[in-house]
Image (tube, rainbow, N blue to C red; front, top):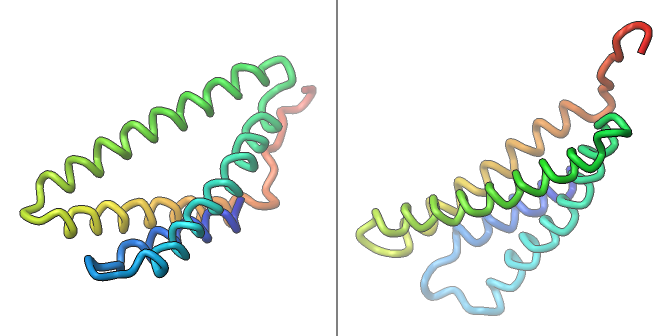
Length: 126
């Protein structure tokens, strides 16, 4: 999951520095990085959530993470659209949205680093 978050964040930052004259071939690298980053992140995140839930609540945990993912996607598209619309030109708003998305990936990577190896202590007698 950590590798996916870092790869996705790097891909989004790569897209943020692209300009109007950037060739399609140069855009392929950050687009692939962002795509592979999501492909590495989501299965690991889903597995982590389901494994951390009690056995009898695995279905609920799966539903919650999928609902959160869908809601996050909708809010992300709405936020990006509002940033693009609010700017006088298309590119500055798009760049701001990509930087914000990359910051979210990096923040999630930091949180993941903090959580790796930590276990939630179960209450006595559980």
